[in-house]
Length: 112
Image (cartoon, rainbow, N blue to C red; front, side, top):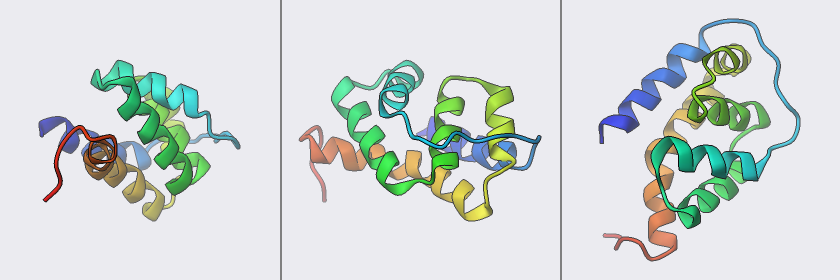
């Protein structure tokens, strides 16, 4: 899917730019709302993604994805500049792999 590759490339580019600040707490509702707006995915999948992001990503990585999904380029650049390379990779790969995982979890598609 083309959007997966665009998001992954954006994560790495934005991780190299700007100075920034990160928030301490993950806002699961903000993630789910941004997910729905950015990708037009159903509420169950976006809530699943938000919960998995909360469990798997660092707070800066989580906030970075929310900013990217909200098309807040300035905030994404600021947050991205604080990410370690491993955090940037985790954030980028999260949105490549996890939507399918969530769809499988809620019965939206069959796994192999």
